[in-house]
Amino acid sequence: MLTLAGVTAGYGGGDVLRGVDLVCAAGSITCIVGPNGAGKSTVLRVVSGLLRPRAGEVGFSGRPIGGLPPEEVLRRGVAQVPQSQALFPSMTVRENVLMGGYLIRRDRALLRSRYRAIERRIPIVAERAGDAAGNLSGGQRRMVEIARCLMLAPGLILFDEPSLGLDPRSLAAVAALIRELNAEGATVLLVEQNVRLGLGLASHGLVLEGGQVRLHGTAAEVLAHPEIADLYLGGAPR
Ligand SMILES: Nc1ncnc2c1ncn2[C@@H]1O[C@H](COP(=O)(O)OP(=O)(O)O)[C@@H](O)[C@H]1O
Ligand SMILES: [Mg+2]
Image 1 (cartoon, helix red, strand yellow):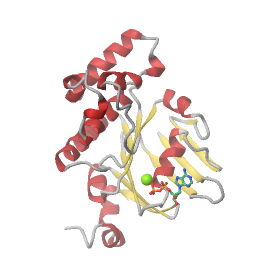
Image 2: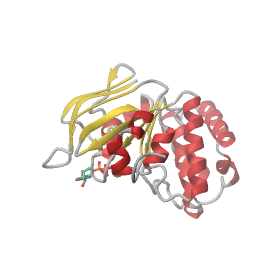
Image 3: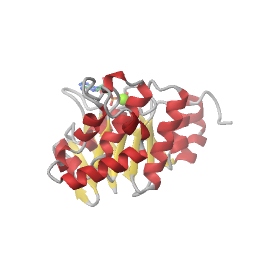
């Protein structure tokens, strides 16, 4: 469904990604882990069209998407839930969610039915519909950010550090929602500092270091790898 082959990309002078290969099969959850600055967010930026690759191929559903503008990538069914603080704080929850449907704004019936489905799926959207997004807690905001990206019914959802700054309860709710969306057919690619959470959620894992893929496999294989256990989990998994 999503393929990166030999992707090189960076900002200004140097290359941040150096020949990254990645395959996300339809229906999978892939988690990218790795140290700070490894290029994890950069991989997502290349996929969502925010950064144009300097070399290599990016394909989605069998068509090349590398270098397409973000709006075009979105139109093809790839949506990113950004790292944080992505809502318009003075706009209401409802307005923020509806913004996610900008590309389908002319189809009022579709807009309405998507919004209704999201209200049922993510209760906070209905409960706080008229409140300014800036008045929500961090966990509630994360839910609304996800709700907004669902307005386009994406086939591939990108999450950059979905656990960042969340309390344990919100964390569990976000993890459960990611699982549900995946069970309903969305393919997921996520970046996660919380390695146990991320790989626990994922079917596949990939370790990125210095802009290169150090290790990839099933999430269980990556979790069980002795070096990963040492580097990221503070010893062998229990
Ligand atoms: N907008 C940018 N301009 C210049 N350098 C950047 C930019 N964003 C990230 N970088 C650099 O690219 C490298 C990888 O960043 P990033 O992909 O955000 O890493 P990660 O998400 O793994 O922590 C880092 O060295 C970072 O400083
Ligand atoms: Mg990052």
